[in-house]
Length: 337
Length: 208
Image 1 (cartoon, each protein chain N blue to C red):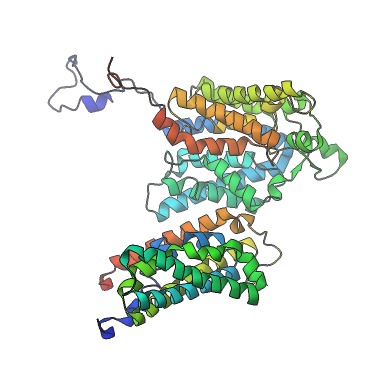
Image 2 (cartoon, rainbow over the protein chains, first blue to last red):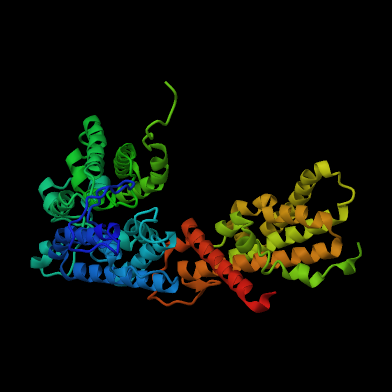
C-alpha cells in the first residue's frame, strides 16, 4: 500500500520522508490476507481429520481424497480454460472442496462416483455461479447431495473402521453408523468411541477430536467466527436436549447429537464457509440456530438418519435473504425521533 | 388477407428453432420437466400436446371472426379443454400404460401455455393454412424437445433408450436423472446449449 501513495517521481529517496495526510475511505487497516493464504490454512486445519480417516480406513481414505481433489482441480482448470477466465486452480479452494467432499463419503465409495461428485461440486456448485465468492451453496455439500440422489445405495453403505477389523483378517465389515443404529434399532454408541472416531461412518466424520483440533486452529488464526460453529453445535445440543428431557429412552442425549455423524465436520468446516454464511451478526445467529434445529428435526423425525448436510444446504439458500434483512442501520438512517 | 402473403414454410420452420417452445421460449415447462423421464413418455406427451395444439389452432382460426374479443380467452379454454378430453380418453383407451405413466399431466394440457399462447398469439389473427403450419411446426419442435430430454434422462437414469439396454452392467444408473432434480439439470443444460448455439448463429456473418 505504501508504494501506491509514494509515486511522486521527483522526490529523492534519500530525503527524509515528509509526513503527509492521506485521505482515503475505509478500511484503513488492511490485514495481510488473501485467498490462497486462508485456503492453505484451511487445508492445514483439515490435516488432522484426514490423518484420522487414513488411520481408521487406511488405503481407501487416501485413494478417495486423492481422486476427489484431483478431479476438483481438473474440473476447475477445464472450466476456467473453456470459459477463458483467469485460472485460479492453485488458490486452494477447489482442493478444499475435494477434501471436504471426500471426508463426507463412506470409505467403501467407488472412485468413479467420487470423481463424478467432485466434478459436479466444482462445475455446477461453484463455477456456474461465477466461481469463488459467488456460489450460493457450499460446493462440497452440493456434491454430496448430488451423490446422495444419484447413488442412494452407495452413499449409505458404511463399513467398520479397518483399524477395528484388521485383526479379524477380513477386508471390510459393513456396519450401520451410530446415527442409523440410534434411529432404526434404538442402540446407542458410547461417547468415547464417537469422540475418538472408532466407529462406522463417513471417512472424516467419525473422529470428533481430529475435526475439533483443526477447527480450533482455524479459530486461533481467526479465520472463522466463533458464533458459527459454536452456535450451530449449541443449537443442536439445545434442541436435542429438549427432546432428550421429554423422553430420554427414545431420544439421544445432546452430547450424542454433536459428536455423531457430520455435526462436527459440518459445524467447523461447512457452516463457517465464508462465502455461504451470513455476514451480519444477527443473520449469523439466525443461520446457525435454524440450522441446528433443522438438523435435529431431520435426525429425529425425518426419513434420513443424518440431517446436517440438508440443514446447512437449506440455510445456505436463506443467506442472501438474511444478509438483506439483518443489515445494521447506517448512521442517520431510519425513522425520525 | 390472401394466403399467398404468408411464407408457409417459415411458419412451420420457426417452431423448430426460432420459437422452439421449451428451450427458446421457456414455455410448457410443466410437461417438459414432469414427464420426460423416458423417451416414450416424452414422445407420447409431445404427440398428445401436438394433437391438441393442431385442433385448437384450426378451431380458433375458423371462429376467430365471430368470437367477441372480451370473452375470447374463455372461449379458447373451452375449445382446448374439448380436445384435451379427446386426447385423454384416446390415450386411456388405446395405450393404458402410457396413460398411467403420464398421470394427471394429460388433463393438464388444458393449461399448457404453449397452446393458449399459439391460439392467442397466432391463430386468432391468422387464416387457417398458416395456423395449421404454425401448429405443426411448434408441435413437432415440442415433441422433439421432449424426446431429447427423455432420451438424455433415460440413458443416464436407466442406461437404456426406448427400454433397450445400451449401457452394460458396469454402469451404475444415476438415480437423480429420473427424479425431478435431474429434469432441472438437463433442462438447464439444454437451455444453455440453445442459447450458446443461437448466439453463435447471430455472431456468424452469414446469419443475416
